[in-house]
Length: 205
Image (tube, rainbow, N blue to C red; front, side):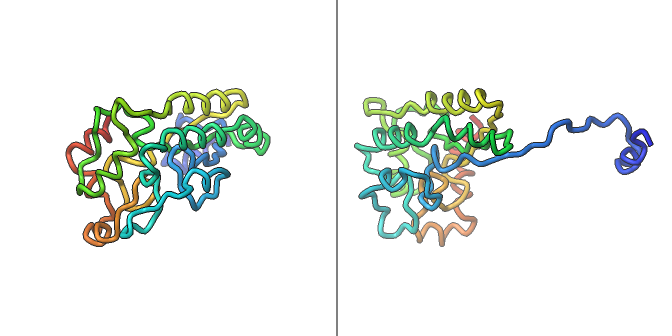
């Protein structure tokens, strides 16, 4: 009836914009924020000989050897961000790629900055944002590569802040899983550290 039924369903409001294209999304995760359980090829080599503290339940990116993290994650990203992945996504009918990112991937952090929190935790988190003199990962080049490949195949990219400063939860997808005693003491699962003023400010940035 010329849109009358739809208008009535919307409470009689006509002229509401209608979607002209369905969103068919696919996740491109466990790369910039590696999560071992995803099983992305190369993950085992990335985490080889890395161990979390005795009281931590999950292996996280911050547990890689400080002297090797830049080389390891750089190699891992170069091996796993592949043009053929985007060709396959487009061929399968997807049109949107979700790209999970960590705060250390997108923020230029002050020298020696770590999220506010317990000393043992901030020491581990320092591996994600090494001091100026140390070798660093060029994350921006790899992120641009994702956008380039996606564009070649008509895919849009939805960047998503997957790991907030201080952690929005207590698990490895924050980049640094909390030790058991902190998880138990912090019943909200780590979100309390995100609320610390320095962390909240970096989250907004």
